[in-house]
Amino acid sequence: MDPAVLIFLLYVMIAHELVCGWLQHRRQSAKPRARAAAPLLRSSAQVCQGAWRTGSQSVRPDRGGRDLRKTGRIASMAAVSLSSSLNKAVRQQYMSLPQGGKCQVTYIWIDGTGEGLRNKTRTLDTEPSSIDDIPEWNFDGSSTYQSEGSNSDMYLRPVRMFRDPFSLDPNKLVLCEVLKYNRLPAETNHRATCSKVMERVKEHCIWFGMEQEYTLLGVDGHPYSWPVNGFPEPQGPFYCGVGADHAYGRDIVECHYKACLYAGITIYGTNAEVMPSQWEYQVGPCEGIEMGDQLWVSRFLLHRVSEDFGVVASLDPKPIKGNWNGAGCHTNVSTKQMRDEGGLQYIEQAIEKLGKKHAEHIRMYDPHGGKDNMRRLTGLHETSSIDDFSAGVANRGASIRIPRQVGQEQKGYFEDRRPAANCDPYAVTEAITVTCLLDSEDAEESK
Image (cartoon, rainbow, N blue to C red; front, side):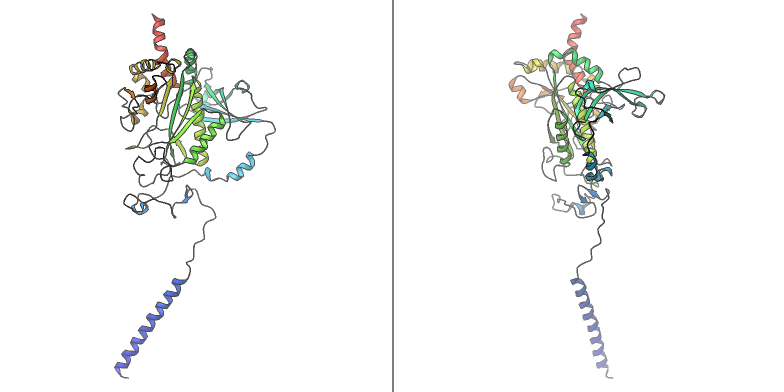
């Protein structure tokens, strides 16, 4: 055969193969892609804020317009607890059952750390009408850092009753003091001495309002909604912010607010704080010993609501190192004289007394003798230096702030900005009351 013919036939065969391959590729491309079967259940490790960790997420670009997932700055969110994924509809079926006239009473107390709260529940035959209707109880103090195993029984003495927002009426929450085997106050029972101090100064009608800051964390300790492999944008848009990219965990905040109102807490308000995932709520004004009672129970409600959502509400005064705000418990103080006309002079007198006992107060303003506040009170991030005492009108970098309105009206209250978020409100209010109202009286009596 002519070689030219052979070459021509070879070209025809090659062209045929190329055309057939191209047509097959077109047919496959036109078919819909098969999708992998989705699992019936998402594990808690896969789910965060309703989004798949490895799937599509709503992620805003950075300031350069880049997808943050491609820059490595976002990998996944903080982990939530397994318990939070349990079927709440099944739970509600049982929670709605009648109680047969009985009442569940949850006893709440402060454990041996001075920070942690414990609780347990018992049944009463009828709904208590007052705190006097609730009996004392006991618990194993060796399991709460409060006693030795060889002599572990501790007493729970009910001191204040609230409605229960979790199991609803007629059930109750009861705050208790802890007494040792000899019925003396436990070491972390600062309420006992605070109550005596408040009784001594009741004619002054001293009011307190405390601003409780806290940070939402995943159960892995990572800030809720922060990217795992990086940081959110710098502080600035988060304080009192709104929007999915500026307010993290609002559901928890709003549920806690409603729980406080239902329980009977004098909650004043709430707002997002400067650091993302950090929030604040205010309790007060409350008179005397009631301030500590209400703040402790509001903290219990905060931890309990956060538990339902599978996250942790941390009161650590400096949860994140670096250029991020810490968490405090600013304490507002006002006596009857301060609220009357010309009360500014009494505010200034109180501030002068507080300045003379700065170091003593720092030791009382966190449960570790000031060590926690050393991380927070640096003179940066709206704090004063832990080593210096200062005061000023509308100055959030001072130890004591006099609100601008108080300066204008010449009466009202002052704000002590030094207490840490994890402070014991009994210890704080007692220290302020003794310094401002009792030291001068005791000095006069000793003459």
